[in-house]
Length: 78
Image (cartoon, rainbow, N blue to C red; front, side, top):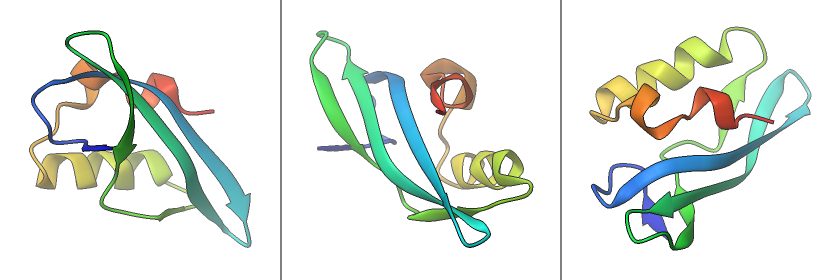
């Protein structure tokens, strides 16, 4: 398991959110390292609000100095 701030992390390939009582809970986050290894990714949050979750996700990323576009976080949401 690696942090989403790890410089070896190239892409987040899966960010699974489950809606439960007005919040999205992060149930899974998977990524790929520079060497191609698939790993679980640790995120600094467990849930996001139902409305405006993308803005909150971007706010968390900016605070951690994580490049949302480089990692493809928004495209990995299912």
